Image (cartoon, rainbow, N blue to C red; front, side, top):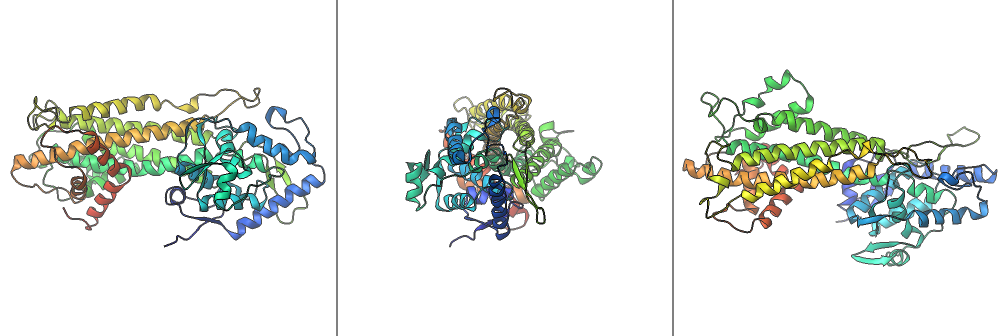
Length: 524
């Protein structure tokens, strides 16, 4: 069944929309009002050119060369030269979904109608997305200040028949890629090359994917942490609503409420009247305070990115309202990625903390000194002969430690460029790349905790001689885990089971199962 096209208007693109286009291959179209704005913006550029106006990047060179005049006859060559000279990205290539996220972010920004490009430019971007033409884009090269110049230049090269693109799994030269999809290259006109590359689409598009996945992870960590609490016969008292009402951070309260719902009906928790210990360790007791704080970080990233996705971020921008005699060309700095740099640095720090607390809960499951001898060392049935989950914790510790390096904020650095005309840069592209790496590491740490929590719950049930009832949400999550990852009777090659657990975490399957369990749609 064909999907309905996502109608872009430059004002209402969400993280979910970016994910639908990037991962779900949802087709896109432009809203009628957006086409009208684009046409008027282009008319403004042509009007200004006709009267000989001096416009940065249109009748002048770029950056340090801004004082050099360019004749109208050279306007098209100037735009083509811009793409050629700026396509100097290096490093690993972006995935197709990352490229698609970048493309839809740039397309929606152009749809605001302040960039002065012809409708044909937007139409080609739409067709490339809808027909699966994915430019080859290296990940490194953007300073995140004059926009994401290098990666966006690589994105735009196939539009003029240069560069490379992937079409149905085939890597082709730009012109051949377009031809394979039934498309033809454009000859860019005044302002158009600059408008394609002078924006924040790399940061905004890929940052949106990272933030969307982070929202899934932070709630999944609640599910896994609740399972660990059950395995360790912990107390649900620290999640009592009264405690959180008197420290009313909204997302701390949300986290506590979710934990209560996940654990409702559990027989594995400590009896409040006869608790197994006076107080649980912080990694168990303070989940609402820590996980809730990370939820705040993720919410801030969403807020920042959804504004950015619906912003005009190139330079200069064209303004020509109805009734105004002449258009205005305003030079400014909307391409500067400081807001995204700070938001994604903050996100990386939050996710690193989520991994830190998860790794500590994992260690508590494995170390008899910390779990009060409840389980054999490393959850092995025959310790010594079998090492059990010993190296699962090693891996989690290695990832958590790596995150501490990656979470160093990119935004506190700057390096002048363009002969010191760009004397402060955001490093936002680096912040986005690091946040994604921290996210992937954190997903694996939470998956390691999940892997061990399932083993510990089975051991606890064996000790009890009966299948102690889990909470409504944790029971459903456990049932899903056991569909994909078995209880380990003896040492085995662990990596494939770890990978399966990670997919349950990263792709949101575990979270959905727990949510359905709470809603009564799942039964163990």
